[in-house]
Length: 162
View 1 (cartoon, rainbow, N blue to C red):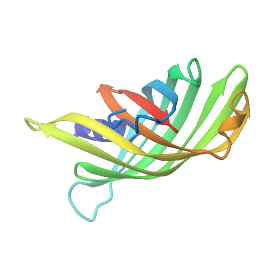
View 2 (view 1 turned 45 degrees about the horizontal axis):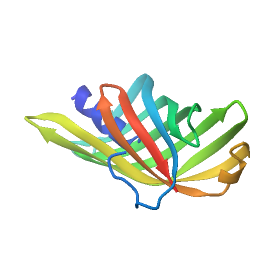
View 3 (view 1 turned 30 degrees about the horizontal axis):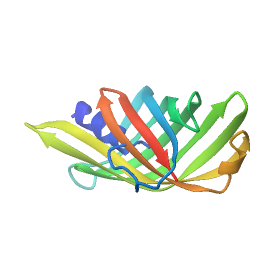
View 4 (view 1 turned 180 degrees about the horizontal axis):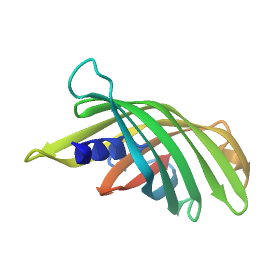
């Protein structure tokens, strides 16, 4: 059960590259991410499989405008078995010459099971750059699409596109 919740949460992370954007979409950043600390999973209690999942994660930029950036974030999502909806998400992108703060606008996640265990976890949605300065100032006020894909226990790829 815990492994399934971890996979669901990571897929929902924020988060959270499984669905590519349109061919003309500009890659803002691709991150390799790891869950930090303890994953919170709380049964809501009204029916089986309905739970609140929350966690924090830390990422390193590997491609795009945010290559070399450090990103720290936290998310909370509501899960009904293998489908999730983001309730909260925010994070800070830090570079030596700039920073940006994002807020989740919308997001969903899914988990596919194979032989009774989670096999594929992915998420997608939108974020807004609420604040940006320095080399990232041009991102202020922009909305970006995101995708995320689980790549291993506690590890996922997070990508943002214009």
